[in-house]
Amino acid sequence: MNSHPIILVKSMRGSPRLVRLKKRFKKLGIKKYKIFYGIKSDIKKKRDLIYSLYEKKKVKKILGRDMFFNEIASHYTTIRIYKYIIKKKIKNAICMDDDTYPSYLFKKWLDANIVLEGNKILGFFCAPQGFIMKSEKQSFLDNKIFLHKSKTHLFISQCLQVTIEYCQNFLRITKGKIIGQCDFPFNLKKNGTTVLLTQPYIVYPFDGGFSYLRDSRDNLKQNLIPIKIRREIIKYPFLIKGLTFFRILYYLSFVPFFIKKTNLSYYKEYFFDKYKVMFINFFTNRYIDINQQYIKHSNYPSDLRKFIKYFY
Image 1 (tube, rainbow, N blue to C red):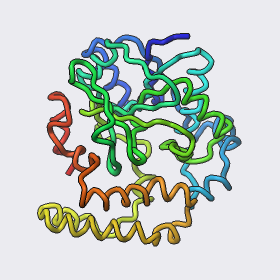
Image 2 (cartoon, rainbow, N blue to C red):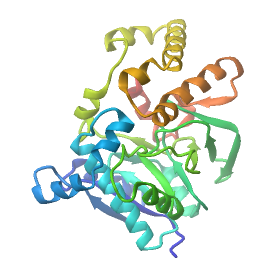
Image 3 (cartoon, rainbow, N blue to C red):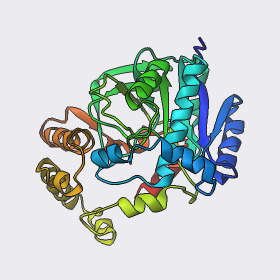
Image 4 (tube, rainbow, N blue to C red):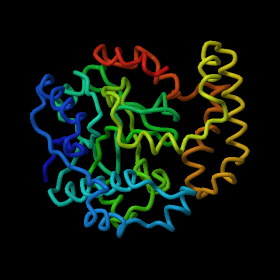
């Protein structure tokens, strides 16, 4: 069994993002990686194959909506990657989207050959929202990188290290079918997956203005407050706290659950549990808030801090 983590990149043929990622790899001295190309919707034979694996009724029951083709195709590529990991008996692999910008610390992580054991996944970056444990952590690379255990669901599919045990569990639960969004199609805690996150973040999602999923995601966004108003609110900390408290009450009331008509387990993991912990954290400060880490300069290596201005 190959115990050295290898890099597996999800991309599309002709993607300008892949060109940029390869240049970054070259600059960092990363030479070994494998690319898995996704499928475009204009190839009928392959499109039909993907839809034959799409469990439409199950997805609708979990998410409360259908998935867009690019979401389905991306999940299909993920399944292919996990099958490859199992077939080649790869103990650990780093699965990366092609719009990932790795830092010099990511290269040091690779050189250290750090391997996870058991049904675990490790994120190198996380977008809001979510919480990680302050106390449950491990240090690596002379305290340059810490691994924190998650308290809630985390959005880490941009770039994550997976174990062969996790891949086996993933395929066992999904049966190799597309049953939900890639991040993630089933309840992780319920199925015994340990979720970890690096502090600081050692990669950054940078698509350079080119995205295959942006239009689909924009169509799904249902913000309670228009973007122009939110840009003004962010200038005033007391208004942000008031808005946050309103969101906590909104999601804890289960109103969105009845509006979206999602699966209860899905709603609890993606929404309810996060806002419950957020409420607790208001008074105890027991957990690390991803919202704060997301815009905190000290949570990034020096070569990633240039991106923070885009967070606003």
